[in-house]
Structures are given as C-alpha cells and as structure tokens.
Length: 146
Image (cartoon, rainbow, N blue to C red; front, side, top):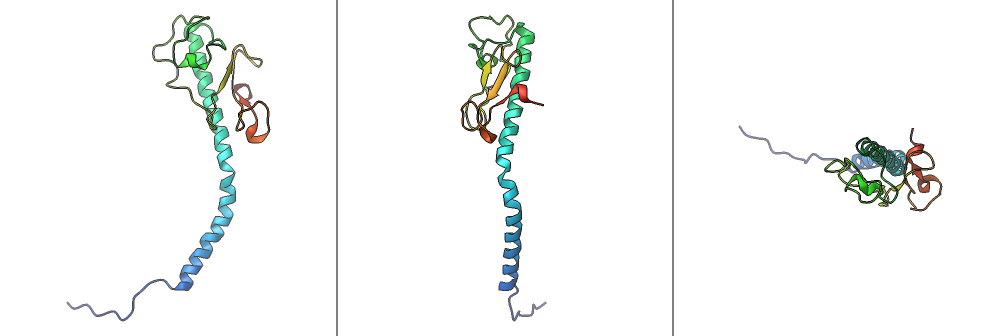
C-alpha cells in the first residue's frame, strides 16, 4: 500500500494562535485577581487549624495531668516532658504533639495559662509578629474561634 505524498503541512495559522492567546489573556485577567487574595485567607485558615490542634492537645494534657502546663512550661510541654511546677503526673510518653507548629509567618505560637479569656490562651500575633494590628497583622487567638 502506497501512501500518497502530502502537498501541504497541517498546523495552526497565526490567526488561530492569536485567538487562543487572547482567550487565555481574558481568562487570566478575570481569574488572577480573585486568586491573589486567597493566600492571606489560607494563612488565616492555617492559624485557626493550628489553634484548634494545640487546644485539643492541651485538653488531653489536662486529662492526663489534671492541670494545664504553666506559662513558663509553655507549649513545649506538649512535645517534651516539662520540668518545674506543676509537675506532670502522667505525662504521655511521646508527647501530645509530634512537633510545635509555627504560624504561617514562621513565628512561634504564644501561650498563657491562666489566660484572660479562659483557662489558657494560644495565639498568633499575625503577619507583623507584633501585638495589635489590623487585617493580616491582627492577633488571632483560640478565644476568637467559632
């Protein structure tokens, strides 16, 4: 069987390529601005998720040891057996967290026990790492969770 020779090469014309580029540009112009605001929302969701996990670990710690770690013992008591008072009576071997998370801006979470809003407080200072602020720089603590 003989294949007839092709007298022309099939492909896209310049007009067709230009139409595709224009369509992609229009889509990008519509979608990119909506996606650009999402990183800040994702960071805030991570903070809320971390706060809930730390809060749950602290409650398990209290179930085993009858008290929350002191402010001096800090959140490190969830990973390594703390020293000092109050002495953990039945600290769970292996800890209550594999490691202490950092907030999305790479700052450690803060801890206070007893807290001003409850038995304990865990919070992030936000993007600026300083107390106060607005928007992405605002403090976010476990007492503010839904």
